[in-house]
Length: 408
Image (cartoon, rainbow, N blue to C red; front, side, top):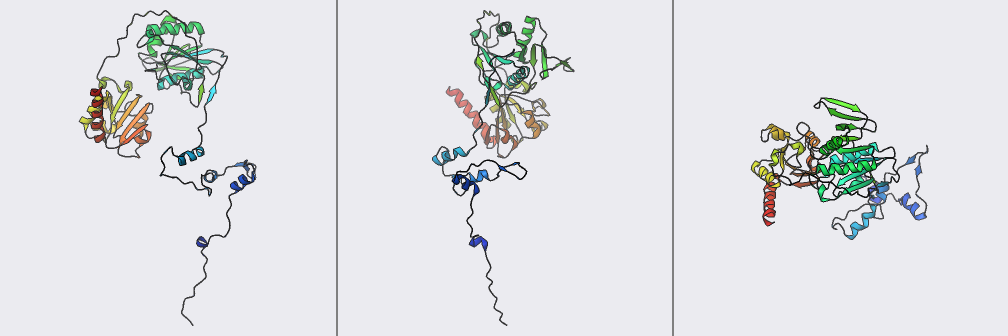
């Protein structure tokens, strides 16, 4: 008997192929001119093809290839641009003949809508839901009023309304109220903005205003009083001063924001705005700070941190670990267990981004993170991220500020 091993004729399908021509049914329907239509299951339910995006690739064989040798804006990238899903256009709501008016008077610091202002417009839209229109009463130019929910815009541009001018602004809003007879007037309850203006209006009109409104719906306003120890439930009065987050801002739709003619007013004022006084940023409470420079466990050079915060004119803040270690006072802690902040800019050096810290910066308009960890939660949250050691970025930023300052 021979001991020579027998070689079996084993098939290797992966090497020889299946021998069949594989066809793509989507390509056949396209070639034959048949409409794709909807594929229905046996029960008559529409079926979604999970490989439709794969077959729609730029190559004939259905494979999506990414050419990394081309820069953005080149021909290959431009050719694949139609494959991206187009952003849906926002629906524009038109209220041609409103049944009534609701006024919204935003603060508009430096001509920009704050998160608090957008909450006011969200509350105004709730109260105008039964066929009403929202009129934005602005002192100076503003952007984004259509996205905020304004159907009409009254813009007062006279120099007498610039800066801190509560008497002139109260006279202007009172004139608008006398002309339009609105059902409601909403303002943000801020110390030197809508809170001051709204209380002056209430005294001037002889009406009772709902102040520090914590929650607003179409049929009820919940205002806080008695030193914050009591909540008062009431039907929404004409004057409402809203706290932050009293209503949800508008989203996913735009309104007309048509300009209305501005009445001519004779508004003498006894106040003269001399501008803002320069103060120590660290004397400003975190809850009221406009620019916060915050430090985390990744900051070791504290002299550089204090220097860059002073150069930027920012209020200093810190994470819980920094405050627990005694490197910053407890009242400088940012987060759910510290202070909830809403500055225009939040600059975070060496902060990983614990959940309680991220809760504290939810309402920040812009977040800049400096961290060595590309995958840190703070980097994911940031609008701009610098992946670098904070000890190198802080002195470089300070030098750049000094150069710009001396160059100017």
